[in-house]
Image (cartoon, rainbow, N blue to C red; front, side, top):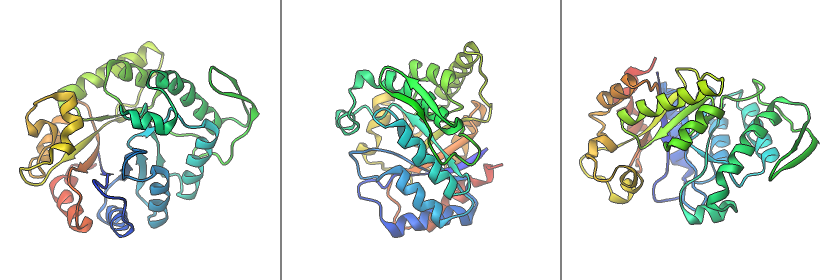
Length: 296
């Protein structure tokens, strides 16, 4: 089991001092990895730039995208970009991809229509894997055409274990067919267990097998009783008026909440505060005391 921290700056742009305190604190206190969100039309910043900066400040922690939008990106350039960061950080990159947020402004930012995202994703992900593994790629698809194109550098391990997000039935089945792991978000332990079963079944039908340790979840947590409703909007859209503790556990109840996910077959956790910490060193110390004892 691994405890990871998710970075979302809340309502303001990334601040160098805050971000540096976060990543160096993760390394010093023994957390497994840093995961950054993506919203092109929000304040979070570019995920690859954030991870490159984090890699320059650290030497041990792994770094992932939770999750990175794939439709709308050029596969050869993205393959090179991610492999370069992986090379320069000693093989510590963990890419996770998704269709992108369900917002019209996000679709406009990536230059895609909502109804074309799935077809793009299914063409893009296999192409990325080929660019990372093959010397020269020839491909003639519905959207992309390459003739003997070589992309360098290659990732340290010759490729990545690619994780995917999403919780709809279609997204879960796609994860089973195409991915090496699943990072759920805004799900209850029961929903995580059901999603895991769907993915395992879809993988078997496709003649594949996903490592049992490659099932994770992003868990937002709160300190105190009040949570700004705007920070709960996405969870409410999925679950409606579910109990607050089912959506955003308190820090005091975090360990018990995570144990329920472990019982559901989930072993990787990205913990994300719903508030914007004023002091990351103090924040990480509190999270360490609340949950890091579960890490194996």
